[in-house]
Amino acid sequence: MKNEQPTRFLIVDDFAPMRKTIQSNLFAAGYNQVTLASNGKDALNILSKETIDCIISDWNMPVMNGLDLLKNIRQDDKLKNLHFMLVTAESSRDSIQQAIDAGVSDFLVKPFTQGSLRNKIEQMLSRPVAIYKKETTTDAELIKQKKVAKYSGTGRILVVDDAPINIDVIVGLLKEQYTITAAQSGKKALEIINSGKAIDLILLDIMMPEMDGMEVCRTLKENQDTQHIPILFLTAKSAATDIAMGLEAGAVDYITKPVSAAVLRARVKTHLQLKHAQDSLKDEVDSLVENARLREDVELITRHDLKSPLTAIINQSDALLLDNQYMRMEQKLQIETMREASYEMLRMINNSLDLYKMETGTYKLNAKPIEITAVALKVCNEARGYGNEFDVSLSYEAPDPFFILGEELLCFSMLSNLIRNAVEASPQKGKVNVKVSSDDKIISISIHNSGAIPEEVRDHFFDKYSTANKDRGTGLGTYSAYLLASVQGGEITFTTSEEAGTTLEITLPKTRPS
Image 1 (tube, rainbow, N blue to C red):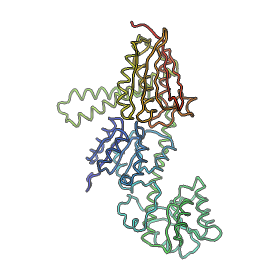
Image 2 (cartoon, rainbow, N blue to C red):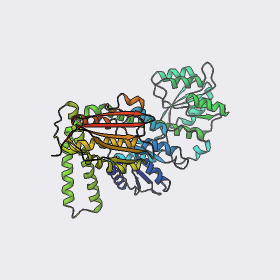
Image 3 (cartoon, one colour):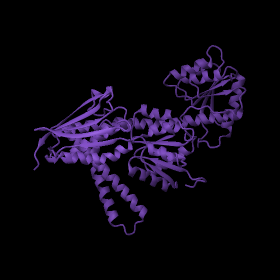
Image 4 (cartoon, one colour):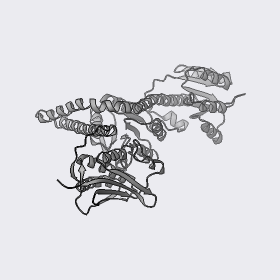
């Protein structure tokens, strides 16, 4: 794809293989100016130094997630006009609506193909920026606006005015491009809409007898079946208070009488374009909601069935990398990215399978003496880099080597989940303290941070999918840690308060080294 002025992209994702994948897809589509960031905070730092036209950001990331990054950008006068695409695999309708309200340009649903990514980018770049935000532009801005969406120009418009001559004028200006229906009263307009007739946009006079335009607008906006239809007021009232009253009633815009042909056509086209984009987005939202609904049903199937094709991908990747004498460096890097992502996916599936077996009581523990102090130290050392992203430090204390009877990988995963959670829950410049102690029979590992667990989740802190106030919260970290401790004969408890912070204590049976 050739652009007169190359579009400059910023890809924001904490998962390196995904950054590389999107970058590779952009290169293939002809977009060669691409910058990478690992989280929202890094992205803002880059944006302060570089010129960017379009952001493609993952939703769930540490430090600053995609939604918070979007909000920061829309509130910044220098950045608010950037195109912003959120990438997500699943989410609730409420969170999708939050992104729409924040000014997202479009969504990219995982998994996606190179073709679908290219189509999404082309559609997004063809539309005005922040299309989901309600903004009132001046007549001059609308007339001068040259960069408009690739919209077919079709649409079904209802014109509501008690004066037949006004209806004739509007119909004459719009009939060549749009399908027009007319009503000479508010009551008749409601009858037409409630009859099930498809309407994409309403041009509504304010001053009408019996039922004025304000009442019609409020009635439509109070009805869930009609509140999505954009309403443009036609009014001779040009005072700011009248305009504000109309917008507060739910209208998206207003057009003053006498009607300017250029302004009428521009505003009708703009708002039909927005309606068209929102309808397309609704399909994406429905798909995301359906994905979430099916998650539980699909989990068990994918745990087993994905391992065979994934193993084939890994084996073929290894074979290609061994026989690479005719391979370009770019191709080799692409295969290495695919191989890295495949191993990460296999690790996630194996962990998921283990958790499922623990949930159903079928997991067979391969217990051996484990130096838990060494495992805890390794986790802390690896977590320090993660803590740096949040401006949180870690300390570790263990007077002597202590051993438990369990599995090293299970212990590593358990401690990693809990320590990362503690880092995320800590305030900036906070500290996470990890301490291992022992008596004759029990090993205790305490993890303290100065943040308090929200009251609304304390009673079900270890429940599946329980989470609150976390950028990256899935509700599986503490749940899986609890299972991992239980299967090794241990347990996890916590104390929390605003004054003392939060202390998690893992207790595990003590053993002797082999």
